[in-house]
Length: 314
Ligand SMILES: C[S@@+](CC[C@H](N)C(=O)[O-])C[C@H]1O[C@@H](n2cnc3c(N)ncnc32)[C@H](O)[C@@H]1O
Figure 1 (cartoon, helix red, strand yellow):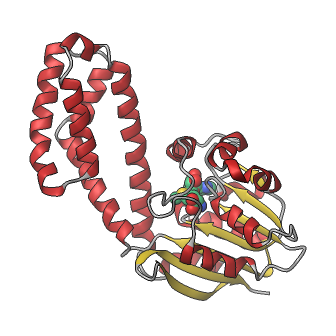
Figure 2 (tube, protein in one colour):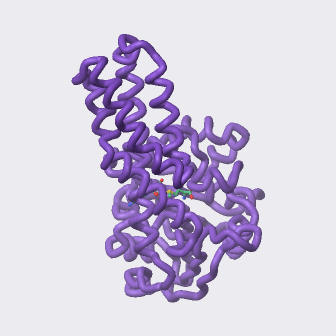
């Protein structure tokens, strides 16, 4: 396993206990239309065949593959560039420990280095949910084509430019910008480094809260609500106690910084994919053919992403 600092925000997200990328929409594993899309792909793999899930996170899609092929007739492997481990996965999926053991996980394995670090192919099916669009596709595409058998399938669910999730992400990004502009993040930094007197700190917290309040009243943003509430709790304490809480300030700053990095990553790839197929060009150039492009709407409404099926030419 190698450590990839640029994916630390993902490693931290998984270590915090998240099961997948859409915890608000799916409390267990992905289900409904998302699971239906995947089941249709898994059933195409012949007995004795193999599946590789890339950018697997905690293995959510690999576990769906396990459900669809519970007779053990296919080999399932999964890779992710972030540093996670099986012990963390066992905690996240306590009722799936034996299935997790049957999946060959390789963490610290960027798709762009799969040829040196990844599991041995070739595979009948490569899967990616909110995954390949995060990679350097010019480098990753030939490696994906190489691990596929001739005629093998690459199936993906990607972010969609016009999804509700894209709108929520844009709003949240605006909130982080506001926290930056109003000096909240800088204030947390100074607090955590003990650079302010207690009185100064209280005064500045008060000032930031006053500046943020009208924005919250207008947007009702959950992030601003959380910041305002924690500021109110802090200000209700004696100044001496406030100063002794610098470790809490450091932890909160860290949490906000990681969440902001994750959000920026998601926004970047959502814009990259947009709503058309042009971003796939490196895959097409590597000998894959686009067979299917579909919208995946949960409960027939909320657009969770775009489904793509490509085939390596025989
Ligand atoms: C949005 S999450 C999706 C995880 C999982 N497929 C799911 O749906 O829950 C993106 C994942 O891609 C991984 N990732 C990003 N860039 C990568 C790369 N270049 N190589 C391998 N994994 C990468 C991240 O570490 C993260 O776990």
